[in-house]
Image 1 (tube, helix red, strand yellow):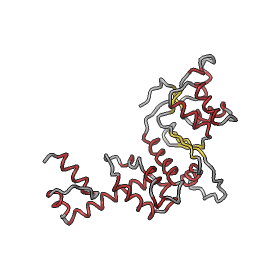
Image 2: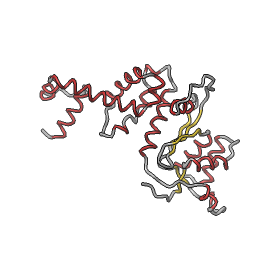
Image 3: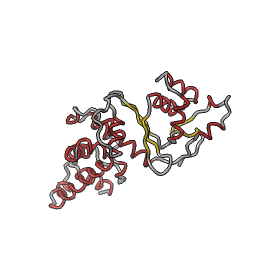
Image 4: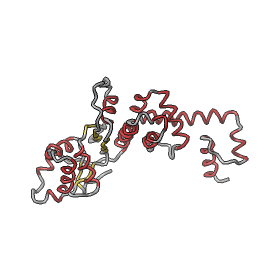
Length: 253
């Protein structure tokens, strides 16, 4: 038997997905295998709870761990880096029947995921206000910028996902008067730690355009189309202060 065949079969058996094979049946019949299987599943659940702390706080530990067990059985880890485990958890929650009455849960989970992605992303030097004043006015509109590799952003139309996420991340008391409208979020890691900021719809549109490779003038037009009342200079200042943008030719690692 090839080692890869054994490893694949063993992994599948841990999650109860093993094909019927004599050697696997013999393996699963061992008294200690159930303990090993439970330990492996617990490791997946623990990793998900660590990677989605806001979701766990919102629904409670028992609910979260029960949902995480369902996810882990359906989508086991593909490598040993469990800090990165659970990339599809937000999508899973969107279709998870017990979460149907919690429609904000998936957008909040996506922000938890963005925190992980920001934490693990590569490094780059973000532009600042000094960079901006050094650009020639006649060529600046044609300069393409792109999002920092550690920048993540989103807009939620129906729920204050960022406000909910922020209050739990920062340990704030729940705001009973929270206005139940959509909002946007920007997560960045300009230095050593992940930071987060509210982001207007125009900012989301601008970063989307930059991610598509559009030059500054075209990206600004997208922002103003999303919200004609936007103070674009103030928006640019906010994005630069957050470390969200880099030049197209910037080196990343």
